[in-house]
Amino acid sequence: MKKMNAVLSGIMVAGCASVNAANPIIKDQGVNDPHIRIFNNRAYLSATHDHSIMDKRFRMDDWWLWSSDDLVNWKLESVLDPKDTYIGKPFKQCWATDIAYRNGKYYWYFSEGNQRAGVVVSDSPAGPWIDPLGKPLLDSDLTPTDEYDMGILEDANGDFYIVFGVWDYYIAKLNEDMISLAEVPRKIEINNPRGPYNLDGTNEKKPTDDKPFLHIYNGKYYLSWGAFYAMSDSLYGPYDYKGCIIEEDSFAEGYDAPTWPTGFRQGRHGSFFEWNNQWYYAYCDMSQTGSRYFRDTFISYIHYKENGEMAAIRVDGVGVGEYDADQGRVEAEDYFAASDIAKKELADGGFAVTGIGSGDYLIFPHIRGLEGKTSIEFEIAPKADGKIELRRDGPTGKRWVSYDFLATKAGRGFVNVGGDLPALRDAESLCLVFKGEDGELLDVDAFTFK
Image (cartoon, rainbow, N blue to C red; front, side, top):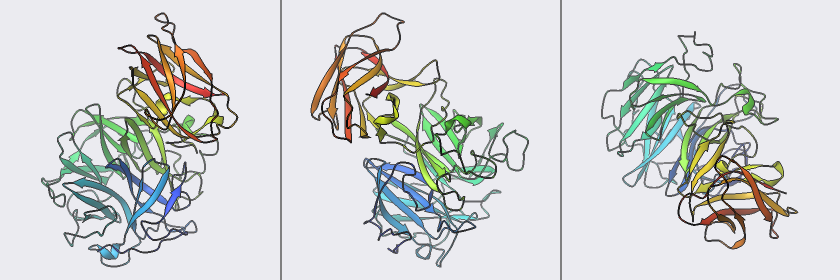
């Protein structure tokens, strides 16, 4: 059974604590190796955590499960103590973890250091959690790699797979019971891999990293290890290395250092997830704590290029799900929720929102710094006559004002439209609703408060 215990740094008993933050999303708690899954329209973050900012080596005493309905406000749901698993005693190497939901039950997978992996099950994210096997799901002699740092993938057919390992990765389908393997694990081939210890491709002993993760976008399979990734048309591969989504120009001021011994690409263990028609990357960062042994979790938006590759992310303190009106442009593609629209890669490397018809909407919650702002300006490429309605909270919320736009000649590109703002509180959640005749109305690049 899961033990409900108090945890460090002032956090109360699981289910009672609540934390509000930007980046890092849960500040000063050492939350890291994040995997975020969406169940019943709520985000669940399974993670390990570093014990103390005073530590001089990695120490992780248990596993955490947090939840949020907006990626801004987080609640601690569960604490999994290694004593309540087959480990059966205090353990200081509670490494990466992941969670899945199937047939009315939650399955929480955990790493026993860098050697083995287990699983517990519950009817609720709040527990109690039961170890159904009483032994590892992945034992240390299963494959030539080390059986830890697992990731779980659900494919389009509703089948589940587990991927794990270091340097070389292995994958196996899970049985419907989610606590046994349906096949012998297969090695995943990666063509021309790179990694934090192999930036130039010459390190054959350490070609990738630990912490593999799989996700699917637009019919393609993405295998990632931290911020590095490869793509394939087939789940089992082979995968072709594509690049790293963190670059030197990814960082806002104050977020590029300090970092890991081999540089800012190292140690970015994390996961990719989709929610409300938006994609995200949750990952480890140490720039705000200054210690690789007491890491934070950041979240950034993910945007896919026309060729399917991922654009470099932005690493900053604003994070996701909230916005700063004083920062200038709010990029339209960084919405929190949207109707059935799409993103469009622009010639300058940026993105815009496209495929917008009458009744479509974009939601931007938690916009701060609005007090004193008197006008709003949109950068749009109109394709027909229409209007942009400004509403509170969502598409059916209070309508404050609307702004007209007129179709422009083909090839004119983006133009500025807008007007006066109603009196707003300093912080608001705003929704843009688009109205017009049938057909595609416009592309939206960004908007600015003045």
